[in-house]
Amino acid sequence: MKGMTIIVRKVTQFIAPIIFLFGLYIVFYGHLTPGGGFAGGVIMASAFILQILANGEILDKLRQEESGLEFLESGAILGFLIIAGLGLIISSSFVFFSNFINKGIVGKLLSAGMIPLENIIVGTEVCAAITTIFIALVVFKDEVAL
View 1: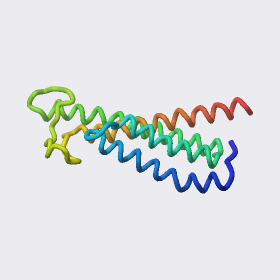
View 2: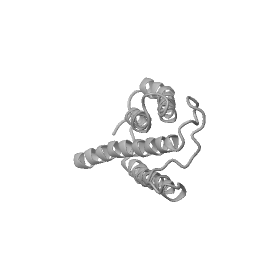
View 3: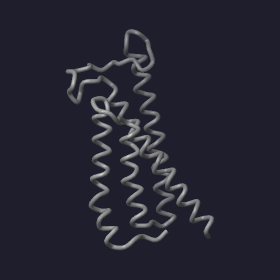
View 4: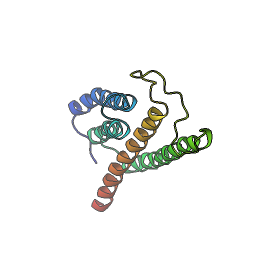
């Protein structure tokens, strides 16, 4: 997969971090505004996909990134289940996903108990999954072309 022109690469170097930060913003403020883990994760993945499309990558490097992203995705799913299980163990109601963190002041960033933590984990998982799917498609296309 070849990269694009120098202009596209330089613009991508400037704009990809901004896109990623916007995705982080959507994830962190998902419990206060529309959005959340899934929407923010897709936006963050688009920053990585933009970098891959603009710069082009060697298949071996993409395979390495794919295995690292699969590990990150599995870790995020495990973290999601651990936090949900902690709600079952710590809370007095013995309910899966029970909120065991102080809810804070309404309207503030730390005002939703464990929901922001779950949003962060879902955003990480979705970002890793979407990027892994894209890389798998690119690697498969290049392997078929060989």
